Image 1: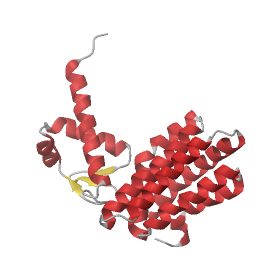
Image 2: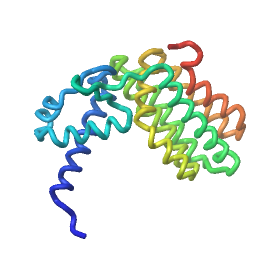
Image 3: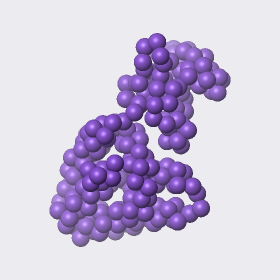
Length: 222
């Protein structure tokens, strides 16, 4: 079956729109509740409004934007309950992953060094000259780099698939968390405890460290 070139180009432009809007969200240019104008996005990217509409539909399906009839498209506002739900799903699956990593001895010393290097780079960012908002974006990215590494090391493809499916929502929720708490150093150094207990194969303490890292919002920080 021959590939429809026009359809391929349309899908490719749609992906560009999705990536563009997501990047602006993570960089803090688009904030929750902001109005996204199709004409503005189309003009900036130098494309027609058709792929912009398709991209917005995809983002709506992912829960990243909300489309209000006769009003327009807005960056989704995450309620406290939304954030709790996303983090609870993550905690459940990541606890399973910790069990696999420890019980099946999946991590090598080289893996631990890789994880430590990621955390060290987070500390470097915290102590750097950038403003707090930019630091929060970078810490967010490195935080997810750390956790995606251990997800994939588990070899649990189905769990990883589910976690990757909510990956962007996790990043949005985590960005909200770090922006609200302002304690980027704690966000970074939390990971040392996780590494410590992974290395010593202390599953219960490792789960406790993960839980305290992920669900800090339940301690009233919001």
